[in-house]
Length: 161
Image (tube, rainbow, N blue to C red; front, side, top):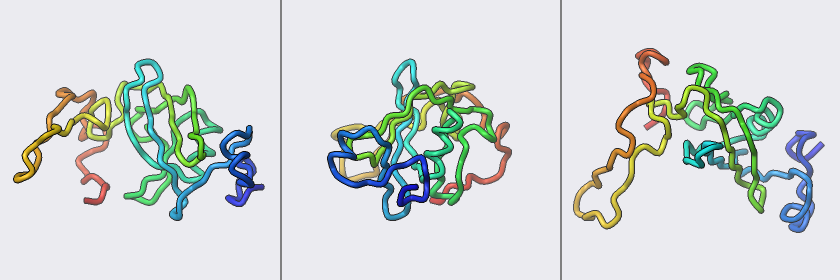
């Protein structure tokens, strides 16, 4: 069993082992988290960025469905458990330092964003904007895949501002 208390992960013993070895030896930050980017397995489109703790990474590996750690709610989050928009994992990659994850997923229902858009990155920031005023964002996605109120109810968004 590794330092994380998880038998699925190897202890981090050397740079060579972490960077060139064949054992999964993830490094989580001081809060026990690591960043994860999620893309559509077919198109490569960036869907979302999130975080995983050891349990989320383990559950993702075991179930083949994306699990994350919600920093705003401080809970393990099975993507799509409420909405039905489950992310079926096609491939998991870990970076050279084993401190960041890339998920390639098939999105059941066609959306990954809790706001209703396909991607959480539905707006762009104009480069070269005037620095004397708040920057106006451009909407790159104009139609929502689903209505969040129908899916989640009209409860306030649990994300902290």
